[in-house]
Image 1 (tube, protein in one colour):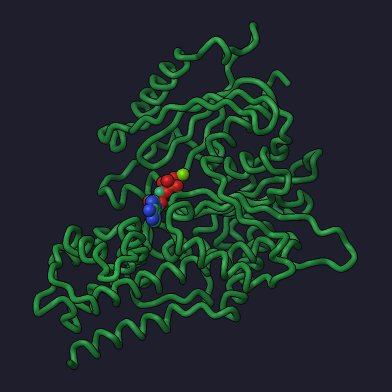
Image 2: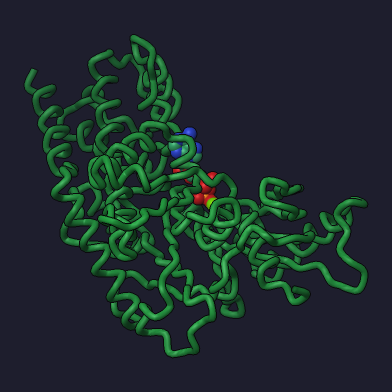
Length: 437
Ligand code: ADP
Ligand code: MG
């Protein structure tokens, strides 16, 4: 019928807008490299903040002792206790605590009192084998990830930090992941988080940071926290749905790259396309399903479950549509279209993430095979629920990496899941900055 054709036109137009052929990905990667240079040249020189992390000595693998870490995420935090022996001989104990909702909308003092209380309880469970030397004090690393704000959009709550809390005092979770990754593998040169939000950090030559006026560190290196979620470029394949998502968001004009690739937003983009199809092509019948009008109702894990549905009649898709959107009696043909939309959105996000990584590799000269030189491996430590759990996203990203780098170079570049690197990384940074070393 005409309505079906109209719906298919909407899908086709969206698909064309989202296309990420290799030539486009190269443009995105080049733009990322250019912005990295600009952000390193001067504060405010780029959408990329390229924050100096003050981490200039990453763990070597030789750290020993007992250290604590606090990893504060969106809705919960973890306290960790690690005993560092040799690499691959890390004893790790942790406790995950969810943050009472009333503290998320209250004063930061109350929140930190609560955290301190939970930390004290955890310290009290210290076993015989986890004691620190007499006469020393326990040392604590602290990572702080920004999704506090982001996950609260979905939850309808907002944490307002009072001005007394300075985020830059804490190690960013991406920097933590880099430290944790480096501890177990000396070839780790960058870390990328693909979770609710997205970010990247990498090891830069200290003398390639013109905006840094201070003394150069002995190591000659400095970890840069890119805050890459805020990247934007005219080369990004933005659709009308992305533009509307952005203008309806709490931070219009910001985090444009993040809004195309991270877990907070992928399901929401799919919802917006489905809504348009319902409104303009009666895709779900002559009334628009009211649940479909609700922002962020379709979460990325649900999108992922539909995308991976391997049943012949797409039963998972049917169930999700019914349970989440209260849409029943969908035909197999319709469900296939839903899967296709998930594929378009996930594939675009994955390929754009790969282009971002290529941008970093180019910046540090690791994107090509060098004639007559020994070619080191470059490992990118990855963390985040999106990368970890969304298999089709992860595979599409690896495929794009291989296409971009070519067979030879791609053999030396390894993307490695560094599960929970950030908590371990915080403890390791406490170790490598220990006052007792
Ligand atoms: P955070 O980024 O908040 O620190 P995580 O790294 O654990 O937390 O990532 C959680 C995010 O990962 C979720 O918000 C969601 O977007 C995404 N995610 C979790 N599980 C899945 C899944 N099964 N499929 C796709 N995405 C998922
Ligand atoms: Mg996290």
